[in-house]
Structures are given as C-alpha cells and as structure tokens.
Image (tube, rainbow, N blue to C red; front, side, top):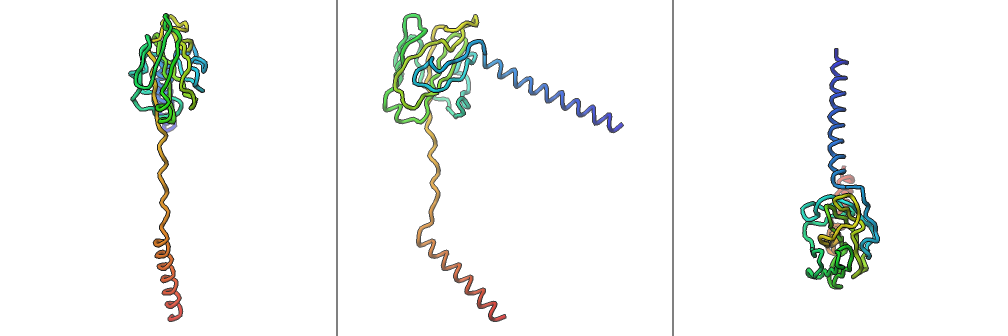
Length: 198
C-alpha cells in the first residue's frame, strides 16, 4: 500500500515537472523564431548577435542578452533615418540597409553598447566591438511575416551601459595598525604575567 502511494506521488511529480519544463521551453521558442538567424555582418562594428526574436524590442525586457543588464533606456531612430542624441541612422530608399554613427563622446562614456535592429515582426541584437563609431546595417538578420529575410527597417535602438566600478578595499592606516599591535602586545604580556603568577 505504501509503495503504491509513493509511486503515485512520484509519477505525479514527474508529470508536473515535465509540464513546467514544456511551458518554459514553449515560451523560449515563441521568442526565437529560428527561421532566420542573425549574423555578425548585419551591423558592422559588432562582434556577436542574438536573435531573431519576435515582436518589438521596445516592450520587452532585454536584460540578459550577451549576459549583461541593459536597463530600459535606449536611443531609438526610426527606419526612415535621422538623429536621436548621439545616434545617427541613414537608410536607403527601401529601408533594407544604411549606415549608423555614434558620437565619439558617447562611445567614450560607455563600456558596452548594444544595437537592436527591428523590422517586420522581429528584431535581433548586436554587441558593439568596443571601437567602432560608425558602420553599416542591413535587415538580413530579421524575418518578415511570411518567414523570409530582409523586411523593411522599423527602427534601430541603441542600449548602453557602464561597468560598475569595483568597491575599493579599505587598507588600515598606519596609526590603526600600531594600535592593533599595541593591543596584541598588551594581551600577550598580561597572559605571560598570569602564567608566571600561577
């Protein structure tokens, strides 16, 4: 009787775990379309890409891409081109390729920069190489609604972050060190006197 009850609970636990894993897997699959893959050459001046992801980057949490915390602030330039702060985007007539440029002062201020290219029902993310201040972009790493590559550009967003400064380790001042040595010496002398008197 106990073994049957144990086995029933064990099978139930396995079913619950499998259901949870399936839900997690289907959520990840819904985000990554997989029909088109991003490529590093899509945005020059970058070293890695992640995507293709469904929907719009503007209403999703992108923290974790490239193992970094990007926050929610981003510069954004529409597909027709233009300038937003230090970011300038140009686009050809069919909005499938163009150029990007960041002001040197902006590049100097941040340790990590991520470009997000959005077009059709998808977007892909590209990690800056740490050097380039300008380059080209295209939409080959994105997916149209029909599953084919190269939709028209909706917008390009730039996320930037600074690496947190490490907390300085405190080094005891010489006067404090002398005080600690004096206290330690006093304890040793007191112990020696206690041993001699005993």
